[in-house]
Amino acid sequence: MPLYLEDLSPGMVFRAGPVTVSEAEIIDFARRYDPQPFHTDPEAAKAHPIFQGLAASGWHTAALTMPMVIEAMRDLAGGVVGGGGELQWPRPVRAGDSLRVEIEALEVTPSRSRPDRGSVLWRNTTLNQHGEAVQVFTVRGVVPRRPGAGQG
Amino acid sequence: MPLYLEDLSPGMVFRAGPVTVSEAEIIDFARRYDPQPFHTDPEAAKAHPIFQGLAASGWHTAALTMPMVIEAMRDLAGGVVGGGGELQWPRPVRAGDSLRVEIEALEVTPSRSRPDRGSVLWRNTTLNQHGEAVQVFTVRGVVPRRPGAGQG
Image 1 (cartoon, rainbow over the protein chains, first blue to last red):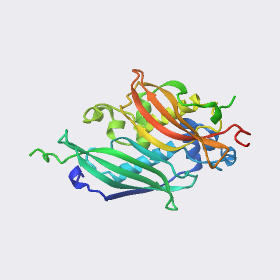
Image 2: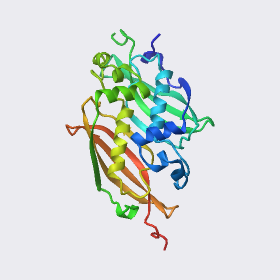
Image 3: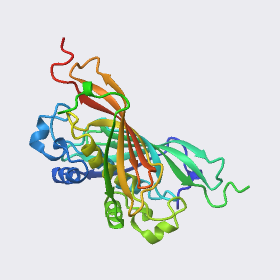
């Protein structure tokens, strides 16, 4: 049963995961997309004043989170489409961390101009195995209304 | 010459790119990190009401942008480290698009509690070959102060 805008309300939570990230994956992603020593070189990373050890690129955390978001929202009509939002990385992801996602609907708003859709403000929190947030993405997504709804 | 906090001021702009993204890369990234038909299947994507054709995952746009940011900021002391910010994808990235980045320093603020560092609010705009923004990331980064500065 697909989930349409009418099926969502603030406070609903969707979950998926975990996925575990290895040192090799962290280094491999960073070599291609974020080639800086604190993401690619475990020895050099130890000396970094902020990271103090190898840390995954924030973009890697985002990329690892997205398949879990899709899994959690697999019944959502129209797929997971967002135009952007507020992205925070409060803590680094380390080799061996096991990540999961919790997605909460914060606001559900029918479109005034487009009767076939609405917007949902989601907060997607990526948590590590200690229950600590490593990423929080607060994102407004487009969700279709149930076909025939809102037509009068 | 490394760039320290003292060397930065609002309005300074740094640039890098372009990089061109292929259909194969868009599909390859999306299969791994954002497996939805509008990112992985050019035929299915044509029917999507918003994308109307194959579009890169926003996370792919972010990942492609980051090496350009590192290149543009290669002289920045301490590397490119950010704790998050406001991320927007105003337009999709299409196969064959050629992307470049423009990074503007918006605010430069010495830390009150840590004399060895400060924060810079950056706006990193990823532009396509038509000069249209495909991603805007407004991010606060940590930048070291020149060693010895602010000590007396």
